[in-house]
Length: 290
Image (cartoon, rainbow, N blue to C red):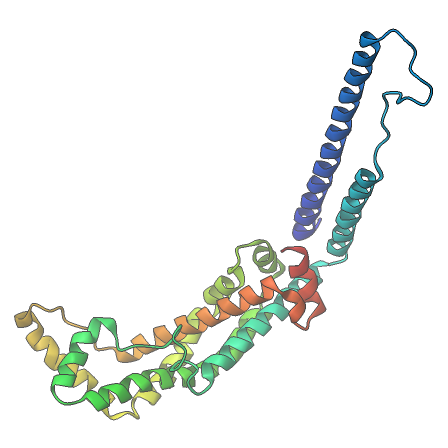
C-alpha cells in the first residue's frame, strides 16, 4: 500500500511540473505563430530577395528561457527526492519530535512563576459571571483580598501546569501514522487540536486537585462559596443572575485553555521556521509542506 503522505506530496509536485511544462509549451507555440506571421508579411510586402545577412524569420529559444525551465525542473526534482526519502516512520517520528517541542516549551512556560499571572494572553481574571460578587466583596472592604485572590487563581494554574508534560508525552507516544498524516496536511493548528482531543480531558482531571489545593491556601477562597451563596440570595432582588460557585472548575478550565493557547503559538513557530528547531525530521517534514 502506498503511503498517503507520499502520494499527496508526489501528486502535488507532478501537477506543478506539468503546469511548468504546459506554460513553457504555450510560450513556444505563441512564438512560432508570431514568427510565421512575420515571415508571411515580409514575403507579401516585397518581391525582392533579402539582402545578404538579413534576418530569416526564425528565432532560436533564448538561453534565459531554457535556463528558467531547467531551474524549475531542478527545484521540483529536489522537492520530490526529499519527500520520497521520508518513510512512514519518518513522518510519525518527525511529528512526534515537533509535538514534543511545542508541548514541552508550552508546559515549561506556563508552569514558571508568573507564567499565567504576567502573561496577558492567558492570565485568568476574576470570573466574568461573578464580577458582581467581586464588586460586592469590595464594598465589604475586601479589595486587598480580591487582588490576592486573582493572583492566586493564576498561581494555581501555574502549579497545575507542572503536571502537563507527562500527559502530553503519553498522547504523543500513542500517535498513529494516520494521525501524523492528518496533522502534516491539516490546518496550521492541527497538532494543537490533536493534543486537545487526546490529552485535554486528562489534563483537566490532573489539574483540578492541584488547583483545589492551591486555592485552599488563600484566605478569600475560604469565603468564596459562602460569599457567593450570600450574593445569590439577594441577586433576584437586585435583578441579577445567580453565579456558579464552582471556582475550582473555573480555574481548571482556564488553565487548560491557556496551556493550549501556548501550544498553538509554538506549533505556528515550528511550521513557519522549521529550520530553527533541532530535529532533522522536523526540518524535512515542515520544510517540504510549507
